[in-house]
Length: 301
Image 1: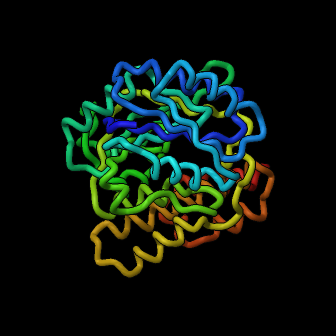
Image 2 (image 1 turned 60 degrees about the horizontal axis):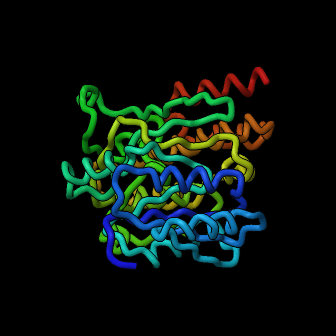
Image 3 (image 1 turned 90 degrees about the vertical axis):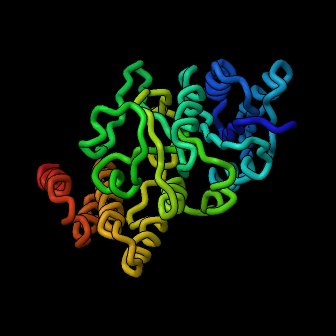
């Protein structure tokens, strides 16, 4: 396929119930200069067949098949086959608003030197309810709709402002830092954001253009809750303890935020012992209000 502005990489594994809607949400974009690379990661359902039917009518779709290797391997396969100057990643059960690529294009024009772009996103439930995710940006950005920010300053104080289905990364940045780490349970996307954030600022739009489906069948974060700190967080903590970067405290707070998130998931899953152990890590005391919430949850559950 010839050169294009955007390559949209869609990892596919057992998402037949959603993949057609996901693809239509891309095809209906107001911006049309893109290719769609669907990487079938060894699906056992009819998802790949549905994609094959769609690509007969839509020449911008390509389907690549591989044996099951996990979502990071599928995304990396897509990166390797991409022709675009910018890479977007959309999970096979998430959706874009028709203005997603338009909003990203505006960000690229306004902030050409950042390492990643993203729009606001919302959790979408089967009931039809959407719940926006609200990162804790610095107060001086309160009245700005589009802006640059430091990833560590924001991710250390609340919700992570970027996720795979809401992001766009320049191909040149991916060539520099590499792709997604393979063979890790969860958090492989955060590992990439961190490696980008070491070198670059990021840009954000407050316009919600991505919908993250919460009740899909095979979400890794639902089905495989880790009970110990994930590799990306351990690597960040090790780096923060050796670097002279002025943001090192924020980096450590990002790891504390991660530990509290794992404690939350374990407590909600009924794994009280594991949740309690995670809360005992000294870093969690850097975020006392959030830590107290889950300590109280332990006492009352």
